Length: 121
Image 1: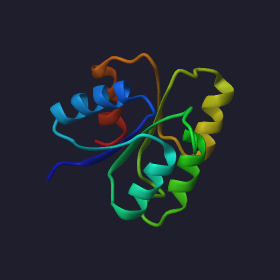
Image 2: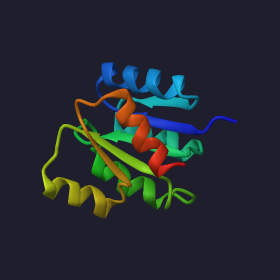
Image 3: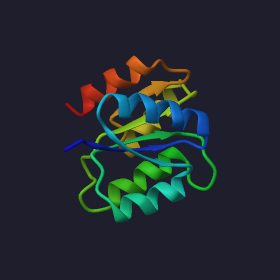
Image 4: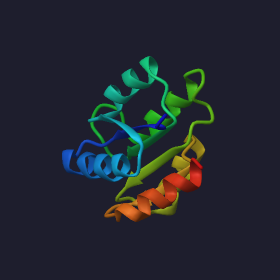
């Protein structure tokens, strides 16, 4: 059974690239366009991993991670932050919120797969 990954990004292009990359690698991918939609999906489904953008409307990536960590069964789910932000202060906030890994945009598909395989062997 394929491992389930929820990808969250307000850019349809980024979601499409993530979907193709992860689906081709054998993962079952669900997409959300923002943090609010992602929270609804996490509340109704069990995912093996979350890959989220930082800067999004409604609920940003940091708040999304904090809220996902409060949902029973998701305390230790791997969460990768995918963003244009590379400032150490922002990374620290992500880590405190519960991010397991960090990928800076623009990214290469093999880079995403490497991090996914590292945090979810």
